[in-house]
Image (cartoon, rainbow, N blue to C red; front, side, top):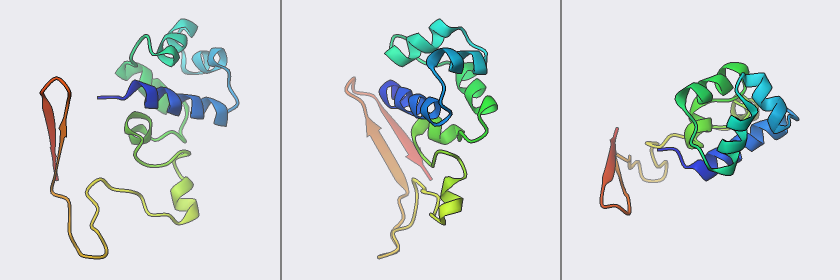
Amino acid sequence: MINSLEFTTRIKKVMDHHELTASLFADKIGVQRSSISHILSGRNKPSLDFILKITTEFEDVDLQWLINGVGFFPKNSAQKEGAPTPSLFATNANDGKKIQRIVVFYNDGTFDEYLK
């Protein structure tokens, strides 16, 4: 599930990077200006179509970074700096341990399990 507050922060980062107002950003990705306003204010959650419009229009926006905050923005900044791409299931270089499972518990009693 997308964290709306963090997602809007990432959208604002894209807008700032490209020096776009919310109106110009909406025009650029082909959505109504009110859609951007509602998403930035937290009133609405982004649709898959909305997310794909962003990653299609802005080639420097990585889908995983936009949705989950994993990776880098702009997309190729990690390779330029020689930084390794982070992995949720990375090996700990000190002791060789690997994560095999992550469980996220929600306040409504449900959970999600992520296996490698």
